[in-house]
Amino acid sequence: MYMTGTDGVAVSSYAFDDFGRNIDPRTGRQRKHDYTTNGNIFQPFAFTGYQEDEVSGLKFAQTRFYDASTGRFQSEDIVKGCISTPFTMNHYGYCWNNPIGIVDIDGNLPDWAKTALKVTACVGIAAGAVCGGVSCLTCQSMEMVMGTRKSIDNSAMVGSMVGGGAMGLMGPACTSLGTTMMAGGISSATGDIATQAYRTKGGQINAGEVATAAAGGALLAGAGYGVATAVSSPRGSVTVSEDSCPLETGGKPDFYVKQTGDAVPSTGYRYMSSDNAAGALTNGEQYTTYVGFEKLDSAAQVQNSYQVAPVWSDCKVRGEFDTLQVIDDLYIPTTRGNTTNILEPLAVSYPEYGSGGGYQMRVDSNVKFNNVTIIGD
Image (cartoon, rainbow, N blue to C red; front, top):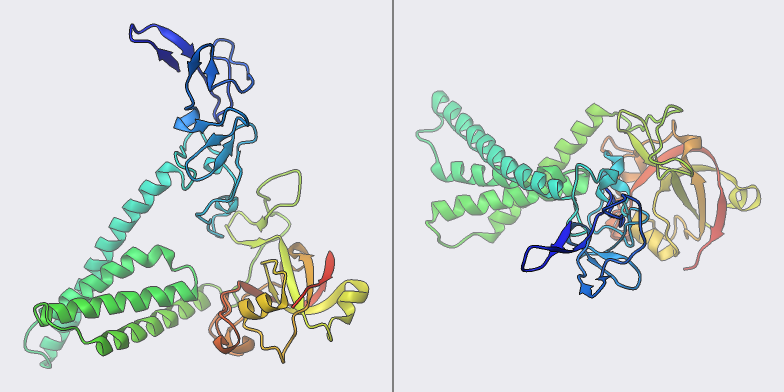
């Protein structure tokens, strides 16, 4: 890359390797940071348009700073990854370690991923609208054949298409029971609003009817999610074994992963009551049921995240362990203390004890802890 004067003559030259390290354009060898000044030329823009800091050599990628010498960002990505695609779970990596085929221009999602999301959203809306419209038309046609309906209800058709489009848009985000129920509620409410608006020609909307539609849509979506998950994985088991392929070598991986894509965080946490953690505190081993994967530093945080009643556990003892030892025993529990047939990967059963949302699994076996810590209130 060259900077030229008004006469077209090159006055300064620059080159970078795949990860953005400065290299000599003549020799191809890596050179020290000297980009912002070159003789009497001051030019702060560097690799992929990032602005380079003159002192540290870090490149400012709009959202966060990037260190080309390590190929890593200096802070976490605000766009979290997907557990079913483990390479997206590294929140510091540049272009998912594929800078030849992918460009990251602003420190968030790689450029092609943003385009893919837009295309997916458009396709989802269109597919959802078509499916909703066809489904409604089919049902009404069957009713006409059976003599229970005289004509097609256009308002219902409009509502079904709008609701279907909304569900198609949100479909990719339905990765848990909570998000699936939310999507079902929003799409049903949106469809009902469209139906009423068409029927009343833009008149007053009945809020009670919208709320009823939202509640029904959320419950129906939640039931569908539970059935689909139960059919595809009756116990939500994670089948990661010795042929697991770690994300990186030279240290403990963030996840244990099989080539099938099944993954589980490599570090788990068991939060215990201080009056029932003798084994963990004395010999570092204890029979364990529920486990989580987020390191919390106070009992109040634990009880809120996992909806634990104070009378059940004070949650003041935290045991940290390597999940590889129980990888074949891990499974997703069901709601209401593992007593139903509805899977509960995120704590939602007891809202009276906390906001919930903590990602949880069960092992129902002895666990050896790497360290055991008494945490505060």
